[in-house]
Length: 157
Image 1 (tube, helix red, strand yellow):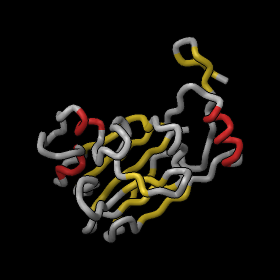
Image 2 (image 1 turned 180 degrees about the vertical axis):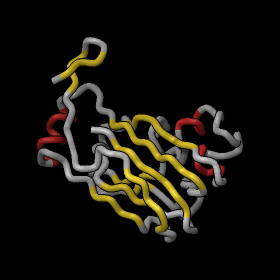
Image 3 (image 1 turned 90 degrees about the horizontal axis):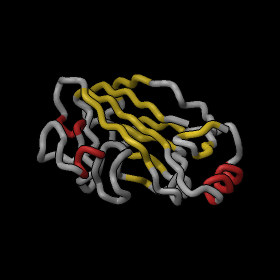
Image 4 (image 1 turned 45 degrees about the horizontal axis):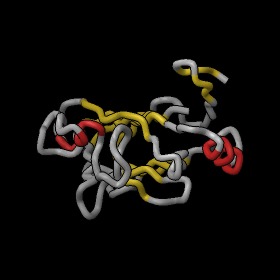
């Protein structure tokens, strides 16, 4: 166990901790990455239940690859432990349909919900901590861009 600001922290490893670059996968959610944890889901849930807080860092680096969370059919999402499609990103409130920058209206393009929704040819990112204990851990990442574009994803322990 490690500590963070004097509070004990339990980290649970998984098979998807390294950064992955993905190219293609045009259809909504076409790219799928199931996360395999180093302990059973029952064990993870027991740890979460006994904890005051739970967080998992998630990052999406993008170039011409938007989320479109605020639309009826988003291109990308993460899947909760209850197998629910989650259309918000780290640093945002659950069910907000936003990323961290959208919560404070400071995205690169202020009218967008996420930096990646700028959807241009410049590398940018959306990242932050997911903190909803009832949804964690992330069990799957789903991405698609509507066109052949590039993105990289990172998911912490």
